[in-house]
Image 1 (cartoon, rainbow, N blue to C red):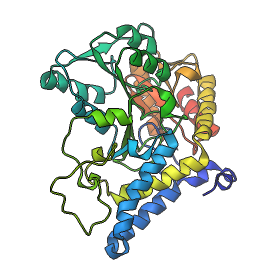
Image 2 (image 1 turned 60 degrees about the vertical axis):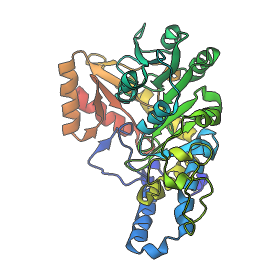
Image 3 (image 1 turned 120 degrees about the horizontal axis):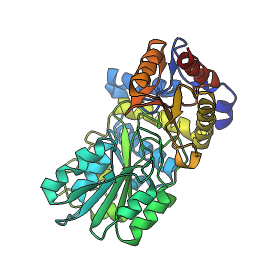
Amino acid sequence: MARAMISGVEWRQAWYTNEDAVYLNAAGQAPMPRVSLEAVQVSLEWKKFPHNLTDQQELDLPKRVRASIANLIGAKPEEIALTTGASAGLIALAYGLDWKRGDEILTAHREFPVQYTTWKPMEAREGAKLKLVAPSGRWVATEDFIAALKPRTRVVSASMVRFDDGSMLDAPKLGAACRAQGTLLALDVSQCCGAIPMDVRQLGADLITCSGYKWLLGPYGSGFFWGKSELIASFRPGPFYWQGIEGLNHFGALIFEDPKAAAGARGWDASETASYFNLAGWEASLHFLHDVGVETVAGHNQKLMAHLYESLPRDQCVRTSPLETARRGPYACFAAHTLERTQDIYARLKKEKVIASLREGNIRVSTHLYNTMQDIDRLVQVIAR
């Protein structure tokens, strides 16, 4: 679908919509566009009649998805591993690095759980030490991480955009500080990749990891990670997915008694990359995003978030995300003056089928191209009653 064709219709028409509900939770699960769901239906036909799925199609689909992701973030396809969510990238980094006892890992105070489930076990496994960075101001900032860097800091691992308040790190600035002392920077970009323009060549990170079912409009259980070629090449050997064998070009010759992982990240693909129900739909979504333009998504969301913050009744609500767009991701959060009142507002919104999300005492509003100013107005009307 060409860019001109997409821009000639209302965005909402590209999705199936439920007119009884206002969906404001793309940061949790984004609905897939019509064209993506149609691609999933085609993949179901492959399972209905498996002879229609050729060996070449089976090998080519993951390659095309890998290339589409690389195109979206300014990477090389061989630097992309296809996974089932954001956790896989951090796990690969944790297992792949050659640790030294006493190495430090920095993450933020009150981070998303994946940061703790990945790095806390490395204390017992490798003798590393996980340290939490607390904010010096209202939100955890790049400067807080830079101030916490020490000679033993091996990895800084954090969300580029926070799940609970929408605050965003200055990744290039943090990356430069990490490089200056040989520290690796790993960013979870699940809450911004596909919603704001991203170029890994300028981002400053050594590794990014991302779920595919939020801003990348993919199905459940989709994701990827990207790593610098030199970083992936330095990883310790480990078991890898059989379709990641170097030299595997067809299924007529599968005996590799001394297998070598393909160069780059492909050897770290989640087992059974050939999940065609997922990959067929995700490929269509990635093409859709490319045709629309991530810049279009970012601009649309910025306008809706500005309207939200202008419209919220100040006597009832406070804005709990940064006001500056350079410090905020693609969504915004607010809260009432007490937690009890915030929970009451959230319950009323849900009852009225205005679907946002409640995260750590904040109501998070995350929109996409299928949302309109009228959707924001409906949310404000429910709050103001």
